[in-house]
Length: 498
Ligand SMILES: CC(=O)SCCNC(=O)CCNC(=O)[C@H](O)C(C)(C)COP(=O)(O)OP(=O)(O)OC[C@H]1O[C@@H](n2cnc3c(N)ncnc32)[C@H](O)[C@@H]1OP(=O)(O)O
Image (cartoon, rainbow, N blue to C red; front, side, top):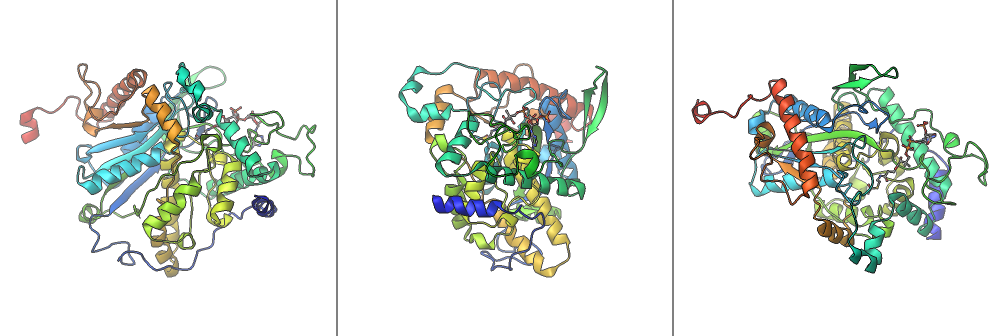
């Protein structure tokens, strides 16, 4: 691993550039035309709408006095409006959410991405025609720690105990085991902020972010309505120097030096890990034939999806297993991919994964990642997908014919997705009877009733989670009705016939 360490040190010597160069155009793995339409793959699962809310700092940012359903309703409404799809035409809505108070642990950060995969599978199987996949995390109200009691059996299993490690400690483990120095981590963190700040300043996020009207208390305690339309997690003034003391060796006594947060003598700080933000994101999916019938622009085609398992103590290295699998299943090489979205839960795991995957820095997270934008766990996979699709659309619109082909190839790469899926953790989830993927139909969202408030599609969620969702669903319904998106009452049989 010394070689890995020295390569990482070299990589850290310059900040990753903010601009991204197009890779050479690659051969298509499936028959398709230059305009993104493909005559012999009508059953492809495609994305036709992709939106997100702003990422706002938990408890301190734009959504500090809001409710999670304010965000969910905003992205649902917007993705429907942008595509012209009617609520009643949507067969299923599946949102990932990781940290309701019943959750034990966090490595279901891929819950949002998994919701995309689940709905895509349902579309491909013919179980549904149109679905909305999304993710929501609301740290302002949901704690980032387990509030329940542990099964004593866990004491007998090192793996199960590692599942309970503070996530920052798993990042420390990665840094120590794979020699990812503090300097490297701080440089990647600074690069994330620089890229995100540049993207924000140039208006790149404007189209993907849905403005959300929420109530907010100001410093005098007065509550007023505000519109939140911009990420407030990005620190444009965050540089390598502000994250650490630039001179080497580090001057640990310097006031400039951000102290290790999770472990004495460690390297992971509040500056080189993701911040906790509130955010929701959603994509609308259907098959290609349906999209073409409706004349909807195809933003992306799902080519493959893969999961990978790693030791829970070094959580965050699962992309090393899953990305090659996803590429292989899609039938493309990593060189054919122009843009990667790789989660920056912590700079240590991000730097190590990037180095081991052998992908150039300039191809990864061109608009910044979770260190700058925040990591609203259940929403992150969808947030990344939304950001990536808008990036690809911009490149296609750039008018460079060579880049159009590249862009289309890229769309396969959107879903070179990963998921940390530790067996020990899954076991623990079963013990807790927790289930993070939340699925319900749009009809149930519209018409929760007192006697049957929850849709049958909810998976085996714990009672506490269900109670929380019940409240959320009632609120969602109320908002949808207020906004005249749905009729106030379920239509009668006669009305339906009309
Ligand atoms: C599978 C998975 O899900 S893995 C990932 C799961 N997610 C996590 O584990 C979350 C990890 N991160 C955290 O828990 C939190 O960010 C913590 C606990 C480390 C820090 O929480 P907070 O104290 O709320 O963080 P916050 O962003 O407010 O930063 C605290 C202070 O650190 C300093 N700081 C943070 N970032 C920077 C930066 N980029 N540059 C300079 N100073 C910084 C600032 O002084 C800041 O205070 P300020 O906001 O008043 O300026």
